[in-house]
Image (cartoon, rainbow, N blue to C red; front, side, top):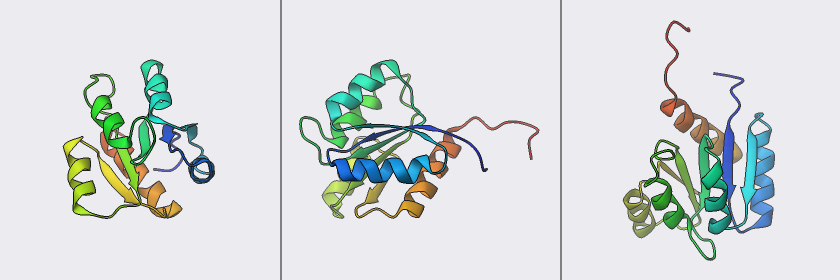
Length: 134
């Protein structure tokens, strides 16, 4: 399904990674809002309902797990796919991601192509299917 443009919230305390993600994802025509910490992410979510959230697990003040668990408790946001990013490929991280209801977990360093594919897949899976379209 080409040409669908999404609104994606990116939260990562590393400015270089935020910029990289904006470049990767806006290349597909998506609208990216990038914030540096969990508090800013929650502030944005009070008034916006993006198509997907891309959250770094390891952030100051509030980590990706905490944001995810809060998002999943809000009825309006519950259906929004949450993709957690982490440098830690271990059981604890995977268990924690499941516990907070994350939809997917991607590992740093990120592959742009892999990330784009997984995000699109998550969003498409959540969209109500249009009937009568090929």
